[in-house]
Amino acid sequence: MATGWGSLLQDEQQLEELARQAVDRALAEGVLLRTSQEPSSSEVVSYAPFTLFPSLVPSALLEQAYAVQMDFNLLVDAVSQNAAFLEQTLSSTIKRDNFTARLFDIHKQVLKEGIAQTVFLGLNRSDYMFQHNADGSPALKQIEINTISASFGGLASRTPAVHRHVLNVLSKTREAAKILSNNPSKGLALGIAKAWELYGSAKGQADFINQGLQFYFHLQPPGFLLHIFLEGSCVLVLTPKGVWDGGKTSSVAIVGHLCSFPSALVLLIAQEKERNIFDQRAIENELLARNIHVIRRRFEDVSEKGSLDQDRRLFMDGQEVAVVYFRDGYMPSHYSLQNWEARLLLERSCAVKCPDIATQLAGTKKVQQELSRVGMLEHVLPGQPEAVARLRATFAGLYSLDMMLLYTTAGPQLLHLWPKTVGDCFLAFCQGEEGDQAITEAIAAPSRFVLKPQREGGGNNLYGEEMVQALEGLKDSEERASYILMEKIEPEPFGNCLLRSGSPARVVQCISELGIFGVYVRQGKTLVMNKHVGHLLRTKAIEHADGGVAAGVAVLDNPYPV
Image (tube, rainbow, N blue to C red; front, side):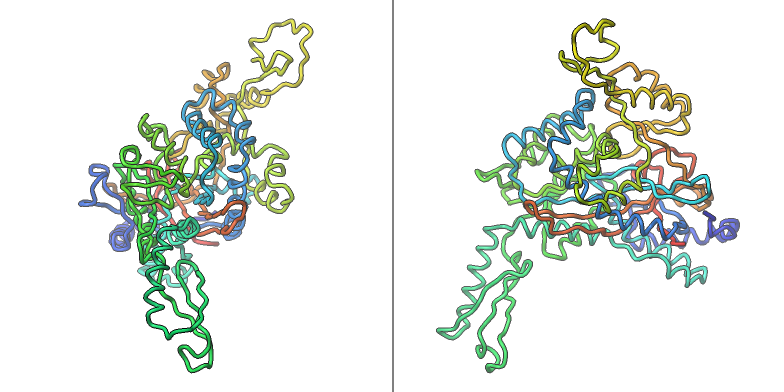
């Protein structure tokens, strides 16, 4: 891909002036982060890092990413409901990865007790890079899918105005008009609102209907008839002809909103030191505009003040919780023993969790790798060949690193521990050869692979010589099962100018990562919402192998469709 802004990137004086205007506009639009020095305070803030110009993205790949997002929503939801698949897929990982094992233990406890939750909410983000093929054509290849705390939907809603401003300053109005409108925070909030609505608050609805209709009845003449029904969060009253308008038509009165009376809340599980709070506030504000109130609490607060009643309804500080939205809990460092107990309490409740523990497990790297196996998508999504084809087209090469096992009448045995004389034991089948071969290939050609642990949050992957050293140490250890190998995606670099607080604007060679936000809501077995709700483009200098915006490596960007 050509840069598209080549001549503009060469005028240093013009870049400096544009950078000043762009930063001012970013601050005005609310593209903000708390500072690293004061991550718990909003007294002093800075702009979130971003590109001076939008980056060119092939329109066909952008459309493909949007088109497949609803398929990924269905896939994640299907995997989360398939307890046998999760157990089989993660069986080797949980033996060596303590974090995944703790999550899986909670999953098993919830299944044993019985899942109290009846409404399920997924707020996902599927991330891609643009593979530069040998023939020069680009291809959309998935890096991962984030099923917990998929971030930057709020700030991504504010960056289009910044890039439009930059291009308008340059009198490039036609180019400015091509910057896509984007509002993931509104779409993510829509999913939370739908889950909140379906959960309902029996007490809140009963109190409202009782109080609201008592007032309504008081105003009407004796002997009249009416029909009462719910529409979203409103109570509607349909009166017979003649009561209000002389007999011409029947009339509809909106008595009011259910949430006008005490109602269940949304509980956002937050970190104490949260630089990215304005991204989260964007979603909170969208919910508040719908009269849905959000409270922010830490796991420690849940442990101290959270409780379940006999029906496993969740209460926090005495207030009923309808939806738990996790913006914490995706890394081992987020959990103390107290926090693990709090997570179990939340999972046992009938509140809608986003995500519930099974959905978080569905987003692990090991599950991603297993789904890439031949025939696995058809198994998880039976009777949906078109969706399977769209999904598979985005997969890069993924390889298991499970140890080679001999399955015998004596049970599974590690190959290097099995005696040379098998005797009369029957060899059923062998597993793990794929991992041995993948390790050999990765050590021989490290530039072609990435070593991925079962972690979220960025900055965890291993590349190059660091990967080789890790594989040399892991190849004869069962610990290797806590990793997967992935073919390295090789995008075509391009030039852009990166703006970061405290650093001079600099023109560098970059690569981009596209994320598509997806929302689904399921009630029981019925899918009631399945949408894509926006995008996120992050760009970083090619010198950085791994890490996102929160990790201080990538910057926010916008796609410029070409």
